[in-house]
Image (cartoon, rainbow, N blue to C red; front, side, top):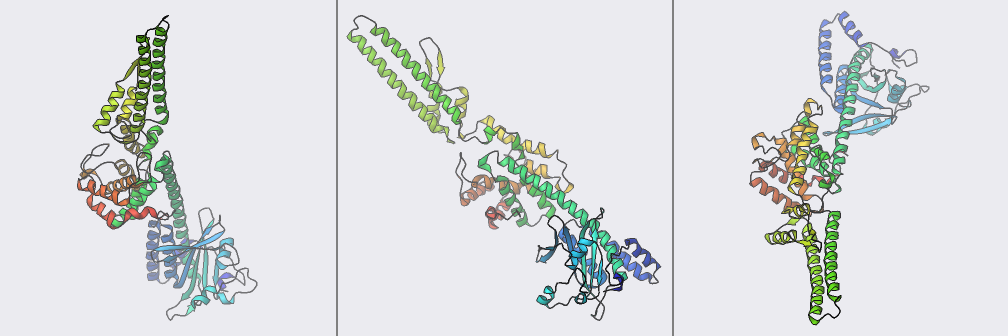
Length: 526
């Protein structure tokens, strides 16, 4: 036990960070003061600039180790909800999370629970009566010999312990391991004050980012699920977009994040599009088609009733002649013929009601049905088709009328109008523009503003390719079959050759097989 801890008792030693500076000023070695002060300034600047929590923890640990000449160091985060201490181990370019129980049985756990500072000269010689023990398993596995330790709690502005800084084996020039001294404790208390503020800010930044990220994801998911056929569309567009952006290799992490959010939100304007239009399967809905069927049945019944009325008038004669019988038979034949023609017309309407291409022959047949009227015996006129029904059935390709197509296309304008009122941070300020231009084409044939290539950022071109590819390959929808990847890529190549899409980006999309990313459910870290 180090003398700093008292007589056989471990106490928390609270030394304000500014005392370190005062002590240094009073020191005879002014050069050391200058060197230490400059190092603290550099540390403070570094800590204030780093927002990534894991990188920040690594930075704090490394700086503390250098200041105290420590061989090892670990920074734990206190997770009171899970009652755990968390630390991260660097594995190549990633961080693996490791947890240990937040209990007083371990050295770090004791500091986390009690808030006391521990200065230990040799952890193998701890007194039996102490509540905490040293776990020798790491030393036994690695052959490392842990000896001296300095373990300091890091407290937030609310006096809550948010982290534990553990330093191991203070080394002198000849490699000898010695115990930590008062100067080390003052230095680490000073670093700890800076570290606690930085960690608290990073945690808060992460919480806000997680909140915003969840809001964006679930907003996009809610929009997708208004139409069950497009479920998962936004997520896949995000996958393709950030995959292509990463493959390009020219964007910073902040720029990729901007692309990610623009991709998630690119269709949020669909909230302003009627659900009947979004989920329209055929040219006429089942209900509308049933109305046509009922109308045509009613017309048949009226025609039959009028024919029977004529027949009854003829039969009311006392002695109908042979000529009258022929007229009655003709009336019956006309009724049957009329019913057969109406049934054929209805079957044809059902046939062309599904999305497809209307040839000239089909158009002429539909026009002939639309021109049909039945005038009953009272002189009332009944159209076979209403103007609304005719206009919907007359759609040349697909299932949307011009008005409905305009309503669908308006979602891009609505997207921009919604997003421009959201106070995005500076690093996300372009999200409204990127999301609002994803249907523009390089040759000016896109919508809503028919802008040309010079005004279409690379980020938008990336999202456009991702959006079109997913629209072509998404699972079967009522109005189209899912396309195989090779067919969809062929169409994209034709669009690029026509100057509508960015050819270089599309080539990269294919060469790096970005289009296969949707097969990986963990690609977004979900």
